[in-house]
Image 1 (cartoon, rainbow, N blue to C red):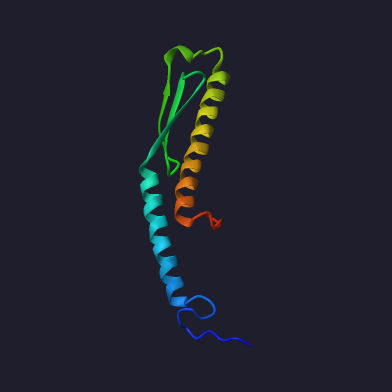
Image 2 (image 1 turned 60 degrees about the vertical axis):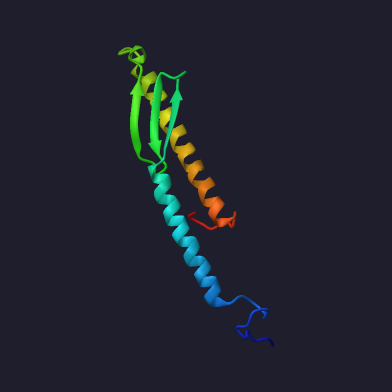
Length: 113
């Protein structure tokens, strides 16, 4: 039966050091999330006729539509293009956030990060 003595070089991790590391990582995650929420990503669909700008916090900042793509006889196509652009923007924003979190957590696979 082994016991933890709280010394460097002992068996196991020092709980105080581990807690400080977790707190530092938490602060870094919060800072990175706040910074990423302000970054924007712009994607386009339909050869550039639809353009969506989104933040890392998944807030749509703008949707631009080329006037010549607006056809009252084919509203469904316009809806499909907007949906495709928004979905791509969300995927890219989530990917950006995942990359930033991975840089902090070192690929630990922490749920929710």
